[in-house]
Image (cartoon, rainbow, N blue to C red):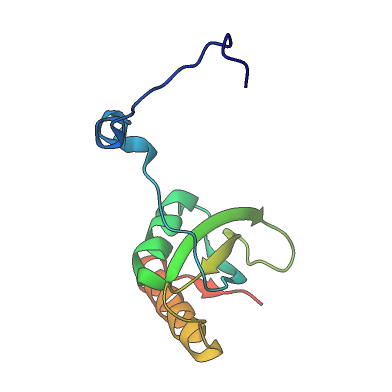
Length: 125
């Protein structure tokens, strides 16, 4: 490098930079285990808000349920009068292992049982 080229030197205090970052933008480790994707449809009375059912699903899913997303609301001939079918896309994942079918089935059973208790929901399908 020629001697007449300007050079810049800097020092960064990473701890101060980390402390200055907005805590709302936290980081999480990248998962090393595969997720399990499953769709579930529950039939409830028309008066049941989707958000309330979503909250019950998230609460009853425990640590293995990573997310629940409503993707369909159906009212048609295959659903009883005065009812609707709410379909959710569920993602299960453990941090330390690949989930077995039995583990996923146990979480699904808890979710359905909680929805039945809270809203008299029935599994569609």
